[in-house]
Image (cartoon, rainbow, N blue to C red; front, side, top):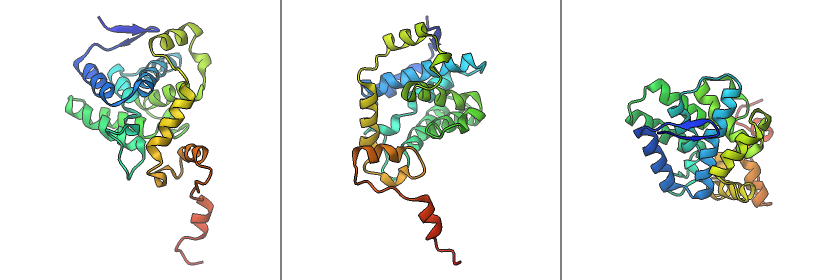
Length: 212
């Protein structure tokens, strides 16, 4: 029988079991519990908004979205979001999902730190951002009842989560600072390192190689 948390059923399928094992093997408790909450809270918010989401695809999106923060899967030359997106797409292809389905999950993970845009795309794209915004930023929590929130947190606690997730972000991006340009991720690096110098969009325009 599928596990159910706050009314959300976690599909009892080989794909989901293998996804859980892969992520559990790579992530510490902070990231693993966060990823499960992203799936659960994202599905709750999607339901509140009347979105019909494929549960397996939503699960892989939520569970893989931070794999790029882990030593096992982080690269040094691209955004951490792309690391997780590529892993999810390959995983879904290997498990018989279509290119379109795998592509939507890729978008959901790749865009989960890009505000607003995912919410205008397919439900399987939007659901990742809905979950991340709920768990990390506390956005639109009124769409989830206090009882539902309590049940999610009871199943997947968030001890000192605000500080721990910020540290996880920094640890995974400090050696690839250029990948944070144009995202909110440079805020994290600046928080931990007051000497961090952000790339300046205006200066890039003003000083590019085009002649005036």
